[in-house]
Image 1: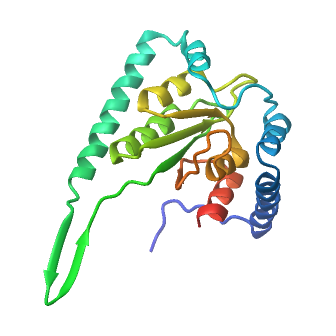
Image 2: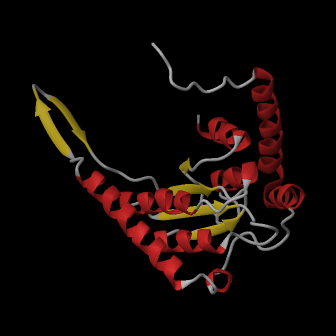
Length: 213
C-alpha cells in the first residue's frame, strides 16, 4: 500500500513522560480536590479567577460579542443539533422474543457529559458546539463545558457564547489535565461526568485515556 502521507510515530519516551506527569496530577487532584485544581490553574495557566462561571459572569464576558458572530454561532449550533437529532432518531429502539430468548435495544443517554474545548493560540469555537449540541441532541440532562483561560483572561468570549448557545449547563474556566479531572470527579459542580469528549494535547489525551480507557 502506498501512503500519500503518514503520521510520525510518537516517541515512547514522550508517552511515558506524559503518563508520569498525568498520573501525578490526577493523584494530587483526587487527594486534594478543588484546591489542587486551583493550584494547577494558577501555575500552568496563570489563572486565579473564578473557575465555575455564574450567569452574571457569563453575560458580562459575552456582552461585547458582535451580533454577526452570535448569529453565525447560533446558525452552526442549530445545524449541528438538528443533524445529531436526526442521527439519533434514525436508530430505533426494539424488543423481540424468539424461541424463549428476549432481546432488545434501548437508547439511554448518559447522565452527565463533560465537554473539553481547547483554546491555545486560537479560539476553537467549533469544538464547543460540535460536542455540546450533540450531547444536547442525545438527551443528556447535564452538560459541563471547560475551556482554558485566553490570554490571561477567562474563557474566550466567542467560545463562551458558543458553549451557552449550544446548551451547556455548567461552564468552567479550566484547561488541561485539571479540567478533565474536575469534570470526572465532579469538582466545583457536584456532577461527575460519565463521558469526556473534546480534543486536546498529549496530556489531555492521556488524562482521558487513564480515567476512561
